[in-house]
Structure formats: structure tokens, C-alpha cells
Length: 178
Image (cartoon, rainbow, N blue to C red; front, side, top):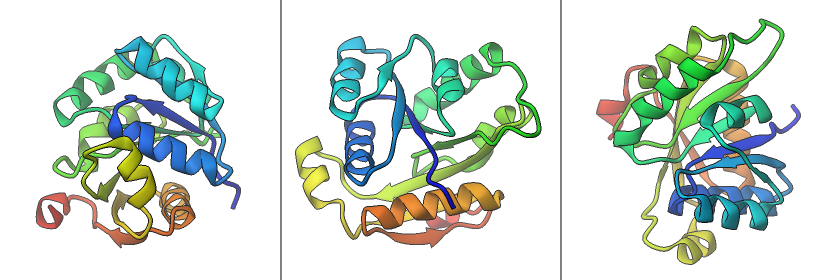
């Protein structure tokens, strides 16, 4: 299966770490959005991506968009995407996954109504500093929650690319996992 092109909404510690690691493994990072423009530019420069002006533009630019924003910002970002993004055609495979350990994939439910596949990818790892995380993330466990076969395969492939271990979380099972 071909690796998805990636986009990141949120250019903090988690976004920087994952984008840089996957880019180093040959993944294409297409677009970055962050409410802090300097963070977006720094990350985009490191991974050869384009800085875009909205979360919806990230989704339009990439096969798989990762929401690497704080938990309390996820619903707001989802609302922004929902208002700005036209419904996807059935032949378009686009996915959005968040990296929250506390919230389940159901927080992205409004995006499924737009034709997007959704899920979560939670790296069980302390992201105290980007450079430390880039150096030490290898071997970490990632919780994956999705109903989609294609998204599950994409996420497993990305985890494998950084020598991570996969823990599959059943839909609605995030509370038990966390």
C-alpha cells in the first residue's frame, strides 16, 4: 500500500516530532498550519512542506491530516474544517486523525459527514522537548483507533516506519486505554 501524503495542523512538540521523523523516513509532508505562524514556517522548512492559511487547506492538500493540537483545541479545529471544507467525493480517500490520548475518535465525527475517514493515533510518549523526542521516540507504543481499513493500514505503516509498536483500540474504547 502506498504511503499517504501528510499534513499537520499544529506545529508544537508532537507535530514537529512526528513530521520530522516521518519525513526522515521518506514520507511526503505537504502542508502545515499552526496558529503560530513562526512555528508553522519552522516546521515547513524542515520537512519541505507548504505553510497554508487554514486547517481546511491542510486537509485539501494531504491524504492524511494529523491534528497535533492540544486536546482542548480539537473541537474548535474540527468545527473550522467542517465550516470550510466542501464534502469529499466518494472516490477521494482523505483521512484526519488526532493525537490525543484522552479523546476518542468520535470527536472527529462531524468530519465523517464530509466524506472524510477519521481516527486517532496516540503516541504514548513524553514530548518534553522536540530534539529529545526525535532522538528517543523509536520503539514507543502508539494507540490506534479507527473503523477504517485504509486509515488503520496507513497509521500502522507510519508507526512501523519509526520502529513503533501498535496497540489497536476498539472504537469507543479510548477511556479504557487511557
